[in-house]
Image (cartoon, rainbow, N blue to C red; front, side, top):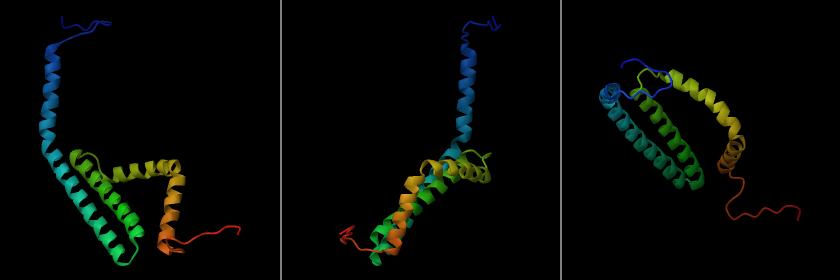
Amino acid sequence: MNEDVTGQIDLNPVLMLKRLDNWLDAIVKLLPNLVAAIIVLAIAYLIAALIRHLIVSSAKRKSRENLGENLGGLARFTVIILGWLLAATIVFPSLSPGNLFAGLGVSSVAIGFAFKDILQNWLAGLLLLIRQPFEIGDQIIING
């Protein structure tokens, strides 16, 4: 009865329950790390919102609202990504930050090629916002 027969579906409730019990034990052992990771993510989101707010309000005081929105969004995104990386290292202790950054380095090349035009346009817009060669409402006339 314990033999595995090729080509036949084996249904052994004892093995299924044992495997489910092992999974449940692993989840219970991982629960403190999951809670800590959720707390880290919540703190990262709060810090990201605070940084974005500070950048946007500072830019508004200098009448550079659009630049503040763009730089604030970039800073927020960066802090959130760092929060996710930190949470991943908490949940999976065998995952080292060095490996994560190496993986990000390799994937950033692929992402860079995939979104080359979008990133170029975003950077060009950012440079226009920084240099301010023209104001809102200016007209650009080409060939008369």
